[in-house]
Amino acid sequence: MKLGVLGSGKGSNFAAILRAIQAGELPVEIALVASDVPGAGILDLARSAGLPTLTLHEPRYRTRLSPEVEESLVAALQAAGVDLVVLAGYMRVVKGPMLDAFPRRIINIHPSLLPAFRGIAAWEQALQAGVPTAGCTVHYVDASIDTGEILAQTEVPVLPGDTAETLHARIQQAEHALYPRVIRDLANVLAP
Ligand code: GRF
Image (cartoon, rainbow, N blue to C red):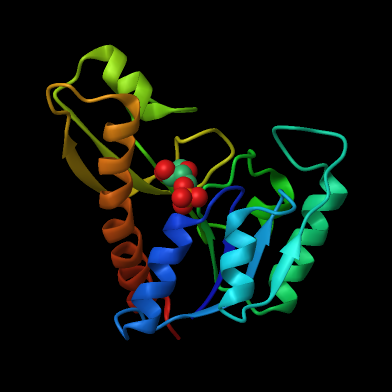
């Protein structure tokens, strides 16, 4: 199975996926790593690993890609033979061109126990709400934000004295274990 990975940030989840592949624990190939942020850490990581990268230039919108830029992303993913699109810290809303080209083939990881705390800085929302348990969720991507069908979740305790930073770090540790595991399970189901 060939993955296309899409991210806007430092790429720690991508790094965890890469480590799992290199350890022989995840029998997939990364066919393309794309980012909407020139200079994003995820692109540096991909280049260091010798993987093909794509930088998307979107001058018009901040929260989504314009249709023509998203079409160019679809074309690049298809040309690379991508079976599953993995969002790893991708900070834009996925729109029609991608959803039509990859139905139930786009997944995302979100730093909360969805459906609680959708959207930005979910760990801060959890802290402010005073919940005893936070966590992370892997879900299919649909036309809305953090609403797609849930594939798997990991609970993470909120500890006394937690700050946004300490809680986020603990959630990210859980993400790095969960995401490769879910991708492996999907590969087993989706593999030809
Ligand atoms: C993760 O916390 C993920 O839950 C959210 O974006 C963050 C990406 O971090 N969707 P990284 O770039 O993988 O380090």
